[in-house]
Image 1 (tube, rainbow, N blue to C red):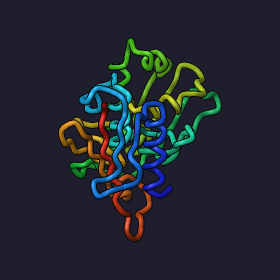
Image 2 (cartoon, one colour):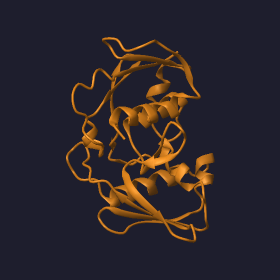
Image 3 (cartoon, rainbow, N blue to C red):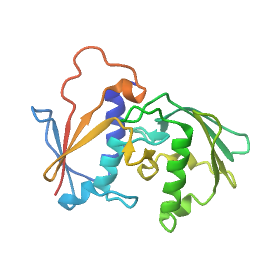
Image 4 (cartoon, rainbow, N blue to C red):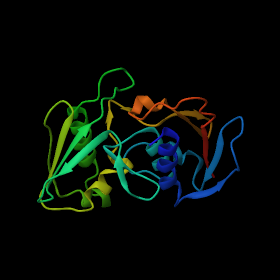
Length: 214
């Protein structure tokens, strides 16, 4: 999937329930998008996020899997996966990617991030949904296994939620980077090859988003 299609799918699924208004077309400053909410809400951090902050999290970080515009599970930091016949083990192979500081993404990074996030989500509705997670282990440098106490057909959809984005020391790997300009979040696409997508040939045009909450 080309980067611009990937970005459209990623943002469409997050925007759908919260979109307030959107200016037509791109201009010199990028595509202006307005959602309903308090002005600072899109800059919230942590695990309990407003709809606008979830959109920003989706745009600037990635989980092992993601959802496309049709709500289907697609690869993200995980390039492929298998599910055992009993439905209790999900084994993911991670892409060969680097963190912003140049260090490679490892299965241990993903394991540590998921363990921390799931522990922090205890007591929330998403945390209750994740109670079947029994063990997370790094099998090799790029392979991670998540074992469940029982079969859970909807598990991949849960794993795609923005609260389970993979982070390390505050760093993340995502299709966009965030710059704050007052109450406006400026989201600028990164080079697609940095997140494991094919390089776009020729002029990509201006794909920036200027997101505000009102």
